[in-house]
Image (cartoon, rainbow, N blue to C red):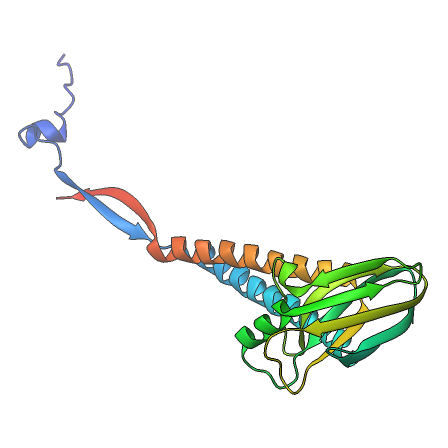
Length: 210
């Protein structure tokens, strides 16, 4: 009786050498990451545009449909309700934002409320003057019910069209527009980051036959 002997491994029959391989690094671009980045960037851009349009519309309402308006240097009077109000310098045909900024900085308004309290509002004291194609903010104030007087005067060189307006301050809508703008910027940045990662790709190490 003869014992059966298993055949030697293939590596032994080939002289005992293992298969030779080499290390290869390739760049893998992930399509889902790119797609998500494009979607985020599009949503962010849409939100920024929507927030900007909403903000512009709010200021347009203040300029085009104010409670009252007057030439800089004159006094206006309105019978207001207890609440917050915005003073806006009408922009007219001024296209240079630097000129508008200077006019706002050189404008000071005095508010006399129905209860006799007086408040001075200086355009130069704002952290920044928000501008649209319709006007630029000088400042805001609160006033009780009753007749309120506002007088805005300007220093330095002024323009022929030099008017200001007072309108209710729509804080809730204003904060919503700011929120939409912030949301759009954040989502847009996330989208840009995803697109960059997808474009650069991910390094993948593989071993292939030599």
